[in-house]
Image 1 (cartoon, rainbow over the protein chains, first blue to last red):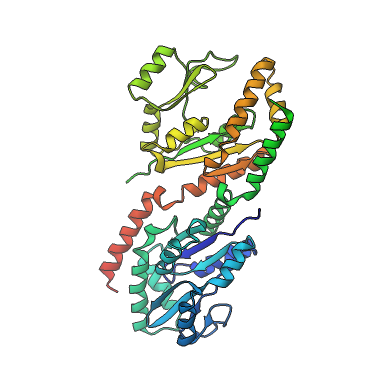
Image 2 (cartoon, each protein chain N blue to C red):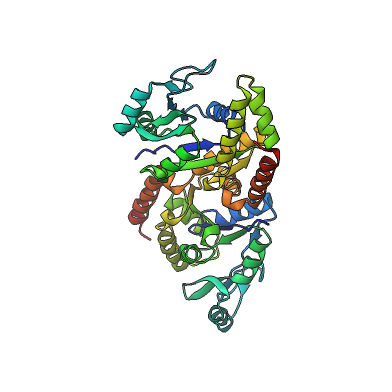
Amino acid sequence: MSRRGLLIILSSPSGAGKSTLARRLRDWDPSIRFSVSATTRTARPGEVDGSDYHFVSEAAFKSMVTKGEMLEHAHVFGNFYGSPKGPVSEAIEAGCDVLFDIDWQGAQQIQKSALASHVLSIFLLPPSISELRRRLESRGQDTDETIQRRMQKSWDEISHWDAYDYVLVNDDLDATEDKLKTIVTAERLRASQQPGVMEHARKLQSEFEEGGT
Amino acid sequence: MSRRGLLIILSSPSGAGKSTLARRLRDWDPSIRFSVSATTRTARPGEVDGSDYHFVSEAAFKSMVTKGEMLEHAHVFGNFYGSPKGPVSEAIEAGCDVLFDIDWQGAQQIQKSALASHVLSIFLLPPSISELRRRLESRGQDTDETIQRRMQKSWDEISHWDAYDYVLVNDDLDATEDKLKTIVTAERLRASQQPGVMEHARKLQSEFEEGGT
């Protein structure tokens, strides 16, 4: 029996260091796949289609939803976002963990799905609201109105932290990275995540029965 | 709000390295208290009353059970074993984790008790049955009949491995020790184990409301 992968959900308000930590987690273990979301919004400067997002038309997005091809989807600021199911199923059946950079709405949908027992959800809190604002402003590619709107959305996101398995205050990137690795390492040691252990227990049983008591 | 301690249950057949690993875990974090079991069996050479076990009379043991002073108790090979509730409640209220070296029957009772949501259960499997027998025989203080009986009990114990949260095959003490530490560290990062994070979230809310959006 081979191991089925974990669905690792990483959520946080924008500006709390989520993207950096997601990248570091995958640098640490390149077997972790990243679930590339599909979205109807336009690409920001520097974003690569198929890597950062799958940029699709509204018609294409809605067709995927109708066909049941989205694991979760949400409507945020007039745009659609969703996680295509195909690559996720393929990865976890191959025993690879899949990392999701999604918001609380998406997390909630996956936690209610058929894959719920394989979900590991982690929420990152910023050290302070002023730090969050500073990080959003420092991107320098958004208008004041956009930043205000993002701050409101960030607050909405933060208010759902307690629906996650684990929660980390990201006041130090290196320390938070270590904690993330510890959590993933421990989750992989769960009885339900180690089919090899079941085989080992069976082997012990045979050995016990052959050897007598 | 202060943190409530975890009940860390470590179970395994005798001879799988449980006592050594329990000691190493407490050397690593001396704040972890050990739940000293009460028993009606006689002390083995070298065992210290109050440290290895509380050696009590059958009347005293039964009185504790009747008064509801045992968190769990079991009858094994004609002797009673149980975990006194008082020291455990005291430790977890003080925010200290408590380590239990108990069998599957005890684990099951604690997992059904009011403290179930604070339980972290770990099972250690031996690398092989022959290794288990070798370790039991090398103690050199038991008769053949006792060893046979222990082997049977060990098998009974092993067959319950899948009722535990985590399971580790102890084929290398140092590696198993590292895994144990990783599991305990990760469990302490759970949202439910970090009241400080709730306070932090409240602080963020105040800051957000004061600063406007």
